[in-house]
Amino acid sequence: MTNVFLKEVNSKNDDLHQLIFKLDSEMLKKYPEEGIFGVDFNDPKVNEIVFVVAYINDYAVGCGGIRPLDSNSVELKRFYVDSEFRKQGIASKILLFLENKAKSMGYNSIKLETGPLQPESISLYRKFGYVDIELYGEYVNSKYSVCFEKIL
View 1 (spheres, rainbow, N blue to C red):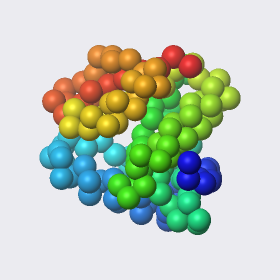
View 2 (cartoon, rainbow, N blue to C red):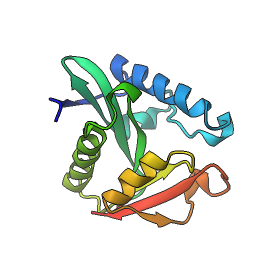
View 3 (cartoon, rainbow, N blue to C red):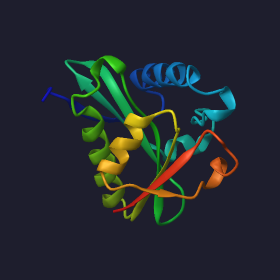
């Protein structure tokens, strides 16, 4: 497996923003803008999100974050691995890191939203024990969303 280093970063991190730009560009090829649910980096609550960036030789290759939904659950947000670095276990490492972080913070579930046109993502989540749930929160009326949850 590739030597991957994970680093917790704050919401102002340049590498995080570059990866999210790539993520958004990729999503805009699959979904209309109203089908993409990002993070408002101008919202002061963005500082509640724990972000992580994955590096290979100081090159940022992936990212993800967890944001509190309520006292029991967090939501996985902006989860992405650069297309050139997929199928190397990087997404799994990021996901496990964020799951462990959520547990250590006292949360007992992780929810997430992804899109039906991302079968690789859906497959990864199911492999890690995430189960389909009803659309929740801002996704309730989105025809571009599928939601999952894992009890930690």
